[in-house]
Length: 138
Image: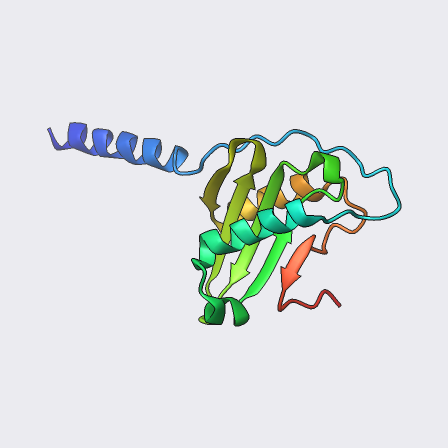
């Protein structure tokens, strides 16, 4: 009897572990054809939306946080946004935002590391966020 319970427990745990990560499919980005990056008011609104989602409109917390937001440099192909926000207590939160679905997904560091190369694959300088606060890329 205990063996059956043990098998059931293992099966349940393996099911939970395999489903703990949300499957996020990202289409291949389109390369920016211009010599410059466009970051307009619409992009600014998306960046603010991402920051507000995580920091809940707390200016003092925002002042003391390192915010890095990544997206495709091609402004015509900016559906996927990825954010890393390190607060003053040194915890780092990660967030994926999909514009066409207006959907936020909380992710962990491992998912962030998997998604980041896919999102910045077409960017000329892949390490530099498209938007940042309190972060010096040098």
